[in-house]
Length: 195
Ligand SMILES: *[C@@H]1O[C@H](CO)[C@@H](O)[C@H](O)[C@H]1NC(C)=O
Ligand SMILES: *[C@@H]1O[C@H](CO)[C@@H](O)[C@H](O)[C@H]1NC(C)=O
Ligand SMILES: *[C@@H]1O[C@H](CO)[C@@H](O)[C@H](O)[C@H]1NC(C)=O
Image: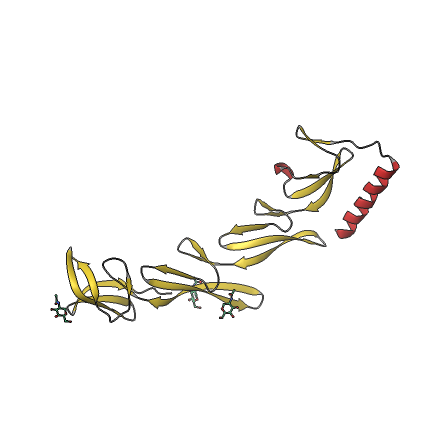
């Protein structure tokens, strides 16, 4: 590809030197581009052209990917994965630049956390040979009081149970559940996350 570009650039230079008056502008879809300018139009957005004496000359091929286009050095984020397009010997190639956890309709970066209902989830990255795998797991569970404030299990806080405000409530983390107790009776049971 580099060689091709060099060859075509040489040809351009020779051409313009040989015939300095042949400096025509390019017309693409009714629009005029000055001779020598770089052309990027939506219809040919994946590729970059240069106007050379009336004709668009291909400078760089972008990456066509699942119906979308990524220009060289550009990025595209899809399903929490960031892809980039690089020049290669075959023209251009796509590679995975970054992978985030796709969890609860949000993208969380590796080592980043997401807190929902006082449960903290962390995004972990595993490498399986050449493959990179991310996984979100719960790393901290706290109790939620009447105001939605996160409290440590075992401490006392206020909770609204059956429309009544209860003092002396606490919570305990069990194997499969998070049990809330007010004055020693279980008053609310929530499912512990399985991840
Ligand atoms: C995530 O944390 C691990 C362990 O602390 C560290 O080795 C790794 O470089 C971190 N990765 C990122 C992308 O921050
Ligand atoms: C995370 O990893 C665990 C065990 O390695 C697996 O059981 C679970 O399905 C994974 N979760 C996701 C969302 O990939
Ligand atoms: C809450 O506990 C305190 C002692 O820790 C006690 O004095 C109080 O009566 C309790 N409140 C209720 C509503 O049970």
